[in-house]
Image (tube, rainbow, N blue to C red; front, side, top):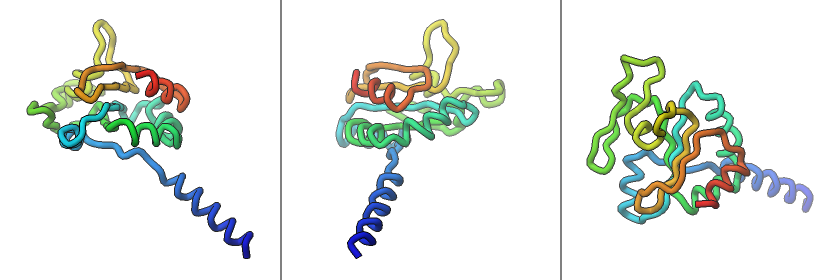
Length: 155
């Protein structure tokens, strides 16, 4: 009976850990959250076609330590850089003005936060902001779980 109970608890605990995930916010939810309680912000821009973005979703963002750190210390925002949604943030309306013109249209908000001078826009793009929404750091490449943890700790 004790073995059966032990196995049941082990399976239950494993399922609880397997179901842990990042509570991704939209920019609208972020604005409300920042007004209630200022906290550093982690923004992740991706696209459906981006192989490295998919790999980060499968690995880095499923890592329990990454999930805990993002959940406890940051507001985490995940946005498709090619979204056609109109987003209102900080009193400004952002939209994707390239939808008809380009094959991979980039949303204004993604370009504003993740563009670099004299370099093409690239994904994945990760932005760290302090609680006052000032830029701390940006990364424009695939990060393993360990590299992402290091990136978060070096803020």
